[in-house]
Amino acid sequence: MTKKQLSQLRDLKREIQLLKEQSAEIRNRMRGMKTPNCIEASAPYPPYQKHNVTIYGVAPSETDAYQEDNLRLQKKRLAIAERERRCQTELDKIERFISGIEDSKIRQIITLYYIQGLSWQQVAFKIGHHDEQYARRKIDRFLKCTKCTDYPM
Image 1 (cartoon, helix red, strand yellow):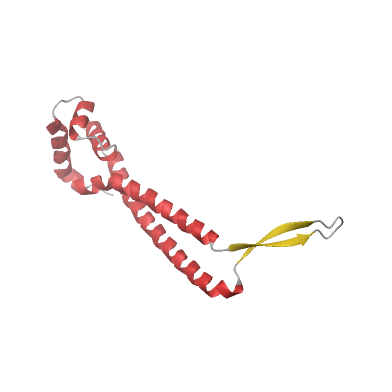
Image 2 (cartoon, helix red, strand yellow; image 1 turned 180 degrees about the horizontal axis):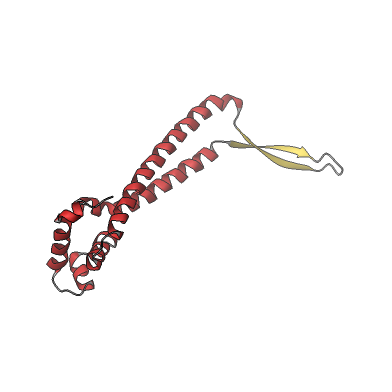
């Protein structure tokens, strides 16, 4: 695991949320493509009162355009779902790496800096040191060790 991969953690979470929002927006647009039409009708039994009935569908003249738009939106939604799946896989890989770290202090430092987004100075104070270099060097040494580069993902 590298620093660059770890620093992607927060960005991956934000991207997954953004992709979910985009997918929901497309889903709503696809639902809205079916235009409702209102007609008047009456009950088949007395007192035969008139009431409005909403019919959902697409006008026959719009069928081809509707199908093209629907197909385009479905392809876009599938592409977004694939990107979301790749981001989630990468996120899971990073989280497995972090949870597999045996040293508690290293786990704390990584969680505080890479997940919570604290500065190195804030991380140092949280773990009981006054020098920000302590936490930074500890992570640098950990990530450079051969055990970490051979870590099974």
